[in-house]
Length: 173
Image (cartoon, helix red, strand yellow):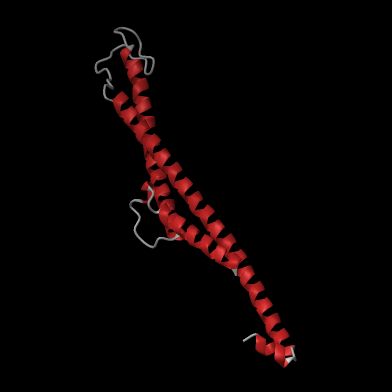
């Protein structure tokens, strides 16, 4: 019985740990039942959103990098010299990408932040799964002990029914 109580306490600790996971910043927008499945579903959706935003940022970053490369060519253009891209000797509207460098830096920073948040979400999912595994293991052990306890109680009951000495049976009560 002491072992069963130990496992019940451990299950309570695990359940409390799962509930505490919802206090993490990554789950601050979560609303719903405080259970592992709901938490993982929320985090998986969040990861999907961040990956979609990262894909958009990748496209934007690539665009900015192309603009910076074009600016390199534009800065090096000289009158009466052929353009290395199109071969023209006339350069009426030279491309300028003054704000591109700053925009690229901002996009790279946002991408880095999304990647950090994605990693945090993935770590949180791992933590939920770890706690769930711990919970299941404790439940299995406790259930095994409960089955064993029931078997022993049945054996004791059978033994007591077979016991024929009335003087000793009364001492029990």
